[in-house]
Image (tube, rainbow, N blue to C red):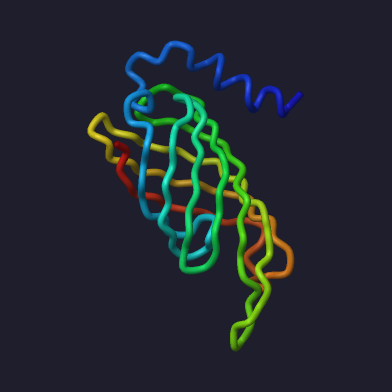
Length: 147
């Protein structure tokens, strides 16, 4: 039931898209501090609908991709998401394995009518074997532009 609500609510709630900046500014690029790659990353995202956003990125440490569901049609929108991460195991002299994980953010995004994007999020970080000692909670801060 929870999975159904996660996907169905944004589709129902955002049927009226007038005034939603995510309708005309679907493609975005940006940088993120913290987040699914832990330190800093470059990301690209695309709104498949005004509520469903696909995002992928690569950082100084790791890679990720996933989906976010936006819960509002205004400039400020809360969101929930699920992202798959690939992070390296922490080794003193490198050579560690890459480990998959899940990054589950809850955040707030501001998207101006001119395209400027700002977002902050708190997240559950579920990884296995990276040895960073950061699990299970993490956060991110994003700045970018949507075309």
